[in-house]
Image (cartoon, rainbow, N blue to C red; front, side):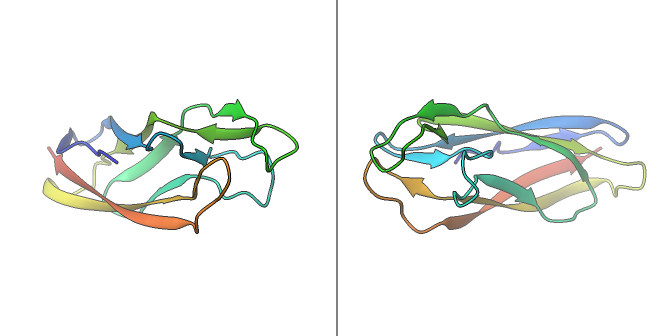
Length: 128
């Protein structure tokens, strides 16, 4: 996962922050809208902070058929981006800070799914 090294947001404005996720060849993860309820969706969440998260935008998953499923699944593979919209409200304190988040996913191959993982995401933000 590659979050940007630094983001600047002006008070009263919204910034789009792209995080690039990279899956090794042969692996996939369920999209944020998996085909079945029992499948674990990919989710990016952010801790409450002086900035407001107004949206988290995921790419559209692509449908893939695997031998363990009767129907195609909505998955991500390779490299893909998740975009977070951050708003700096008028009351947001100015200056540098770090915003913490979490990315939850379950990596799978064509034959096995590994236990779900939650990895930390750190984003350096400067509020102007």
